[in-house]
Image 1: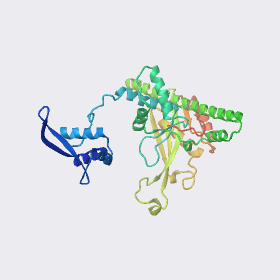
Image 2: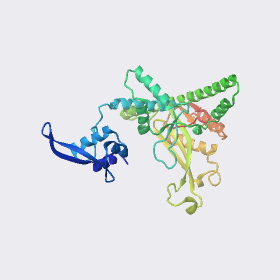
Image 3: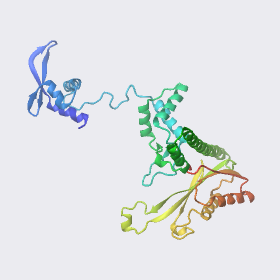
Image 4: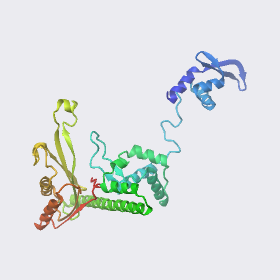
Length: 373
């Protein structure tokens, strides 16, 4: 039973009795008779039966005298409370969480299958919402700005930025991280614990540096494309720059039909698999290659992630969607277990030797931390 339903039940139970005697101010005296299941009870028993306090009962009586047996409506209902935070303070809290996620977070390539919301961004598992809030309060105090409390900060995070999450241990897929955690857990002496902790700390710092480099490259490329677009819009020239940054990676494959109402094993013997390869000029456009099962090198969709198909799509993307730059930076997925990196390096060297590019900066993040946009 909700609070409003409980108040309406009490209003229907109370029986108001108005006497003929008059009190000061020519006002008739009135009293209430407390009834429970047809039996008249005392005031204290009525409070215990309905689990309310005397002040709440007095407020209900006052409401009935003023408005009758109608639902109680809060005085601030439909308007902004006087103690609410200004919109600028809420906006600053949202902007801080976004900035923190851009610096420390690892974005996923797409939302989980079956969901069409924004792709999640995972913060390091060592962070907590309380630690992020403490840093937020520190920054606001330095800038002499008003800040929200921890509870309001969590509510803003939950309602405005639900796609930003703190990674749980099971979502950390880096083998080095798992080995370091195991070494810390199994360390016996203090020296072993210090060495294992220091190793884990250095690995996390290295992954953070690689992540910061990737974010810097993306931001620089985005800002360059924005400036070039404004200049070219006035001059009518095409894109020609030496600071372009590309990102390419395979996304998770999808099955067709993707939203079938029939049960897959019952109606379809085997759904059709389609691979997705993304090639993105950061800050400009992204192009997705859809590879059907009958378009792969191997049989029945095999050998999709091999060097032949990857180099073919990269070459086609440079030739068809390139911006005509002479220098560029590239971030790729440093996926272990696939012997194709040396062939991709050979292809990029061939592009510089033949004059298609003058300089190519080929960069990779640490394995297990390569979540590209």
